[in-house]
Amino acid sequence: MRLGALEAGGTKMVCAIVDDEGHISDRFTTPTEDPEKTLKILYDYFAERQIDCLGIACFGPIDLHEDSPTYGCVTTSPKVAWRNVNVVKAFEGLGVPVGFDTDVNGSVLGETTYGIGRGVKNCVYITIGTGIGIGVLSEGRLLHGMLHPEGGHILLPMSPDDPMERGICPNHPNCFEGLAAGPSIEKRWGKSAKELGDRDDVWDVEAFYIANALVSYTMTLSPELFILGGGVMHKADVLLPKVRAKYAELMNNYIQTKQTADLEHYIVCQSLDDNQGLLGAAEIGRMALGKAR
Amino acid sequence: MRLGALEAGGTKMVCAIVDDEGHISDRFTTPTEDPEKTLKILYDYFAERQIDCLGIACFGPIDLHEDSPTYGCVTTSPKVAWRNVNVVKAFEGLGVPVGFDTDVNGSVLGETTYGIGRGVKNCVYITIGTGIGIGVLSEGRLLHGMLHPEGGHILLPMSPDDPMERGICPNHPNCFEGLAAGPSIEKRWGKSAKELGDRDDVWDVEAFYIANALVSYTMTLSPELFILGGGVMHKADVLLPKVRAKYAELMNNYIQTKQTADLEHYIVCQSLDDNQGLLGAAEIGRMALGKAR
Image 1 (spheres, chains in turn green, brown):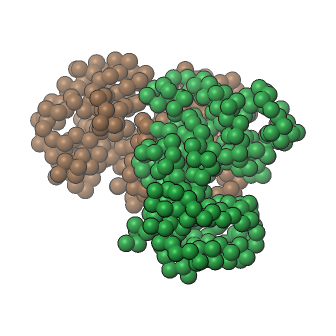
Image 2 (cartoon, chains in turn yellow, red):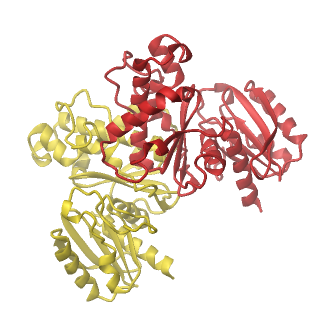
Image 3 (spheres, helix red, strand yellow):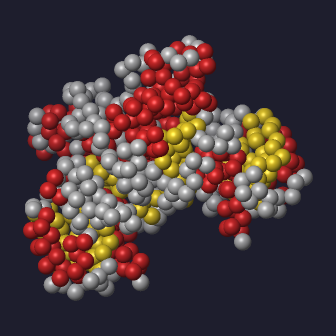
């Protein structure tokens, strides 16, 4: 089987062919530019390769309701040129089943199929990079609901040690993304995350926000595993122990399960070298193929 | 069909027989006292009536994993006498299938089967009374995950207008329940909710916390409908318009769906005269019967 996989990000598009066992071949990357131009490049890439299905893990917000007239479209994205662009329709000409979901749902699917979350039925994947998003597997199925989770925009208490007065999200003064994504760190301390080294003040504030978010995810989504990815998590050596400690402090033994008793295995980093989204996209394609049969 | 229904609350137990169409008969209430004594009364009630199945919607936290050795037990409840009591086992002698879930999952099931949420596949029910809990229907199924949602304990920012310095939850200084359940209101203003009348300062603070919680539920669980119940919502005439207004302000157009464009139908009160838990319990029983067949 040849699964076509497209990880459609706000800055770049990554394509590949993935086999039945999750081996990635023939990877190709192109920047996310004018939609018409970019989609043509991507279409041609897949048209030239014999694929059985295509899975797209896409930046959002997107319309995932198959019975909606705008199914397959990017909706209220800050990437204005891509608003109302129908990403699914762009690949109809390939004549293969096309699956479509969020980039972070791709990542949670990749990690629970091939990675550290293999076999876990209730898992939350959190990407913390230029933005923050969550992908949710609930009882073995990707959670969509009314739209899809937008976990980067839950509202958090401000850290008493935060030198900023508010986060940088244009919509919310105190959402997770506005307080803890990469650009917020840079704004807060006046330097990029890389330049900030291992400073405790920096990563204590960051861990405060991540841990607050994880507690609220536990209380709402009740996952058996948290997987953290994205650029900010490249600082995991310093950050992850702080996140676990703060999580335990905030949770304060309210929930006592075997998972919360073992935070080193409950709150972990992505395990697939940032291929989780691409491998998840392949799985989204496989699911579309299953439905079409 | 005669569906046995037990709404097992922390202060009282409500039993009834429910027919196929949701008609409640033969209602019986007994206080929640010593577990052995109370469970005997309840067992006898159902044993004397011919029932096809029993559904229990129970206060928690509880163990819902059927493959767990403590399945059917109340776990870390503040009602210490009930800790580790196996509620399901207590009814094994009836010889009928027994279903078991949380009280709030019962309510969301009751409302989406017989009430204002009929037919909705993604719904969050929030009870705001002596405590706060959420029941979650996700893609048509009750959400459990690692444990079950404990939505009363998400961590919220403090309202700048709150005269209290912290909430009253012993575990969390700023969780939803500790800031917004009935006892918190009484502690904050020194009077019971009933005595506080329609005072704007009182219900503005309350609406702030409820709206913050609903925004975070939207960002994580992405429901198509919110249903609010519990004693505090008896003040809905004053409270609900404030909740909707604050929700719109906090959301600040970040998510634009047909539901969020029509908050009068997105955020509503329970519709079943506080029978939603009992009717949901009957449905939990019916589901157990379906599984057993």
